[in-house]
Length: 380
Image (cartoon, rainbow, N blue to C red):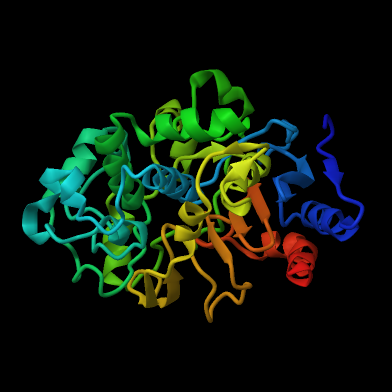
């Protein structure tokens, strides 16, 4: 929309969704954003609006995309579930079965499921690295293979903010001979027509919205006393400005570097919401989809210092987030979010450029999503 107004559509049952979305933009809670939802594989909401930059010179268009930080993890998890469903990956197997070098420093018994559930003890790099080092896949994965866990694997989760994508991604690469971004693109994004990228081609740069950092003093690691968070926030030091660079966008950063919009996020996850079949094409078996719901670990997360419950690559409802049974979710630093209700066959996604002081999605998305969540619950 040339003037930054709201475009797209909402189903006739959801006028309140559009009202909430517009309210976020009009109040300044959002600068530019997109919100989408699917039901039984059909798009029932697809909204976008506002501005792609803080100066409000570029409207947020239908095809505007943005870095969504940790919502990228859900695409990596989906790719791993796909590979596992084909029988090529066993989540209960030791990581070292696929990646022999990983067995160093007491890690021979760490399972792939520990990587998927943030419980491997490799929440960050022991050695100091820079943002530029993240673009060197061989370097950062070799460092992880060599280092010792920060706690006893499998005993607790500790959010693997940046490392999880490299860990799971390297397992996928060892099995398939392709990078996780390539497998995701060839087997999920392109067949579905989902405009989400783990490694963005330079040809798409003009469509990318600029992230607007959260308020000063609220960025990840600011004022931290948790020793894990302190180490993670310094190695590498978080640089939101890096998301505007070609190096960041083009690199495969499968935990934090994905670029897309709400429509593409919701569309990709219809595979899980619809029991593995989308538009008549079977991507996965029903059983392979339900693996995502299998609880892996629950308790106080050593990084978040809060109760968390993880399934196979996704968060599960728990005391901290009273979503309905059958729902898996995750959010990205600053506010992006995806919810997938496997029982109601519904996906909900939100992506924005004005970052809030949160690593797990925030209330802007939930406020817009509430009418859809309520109907999904009633339909069960």
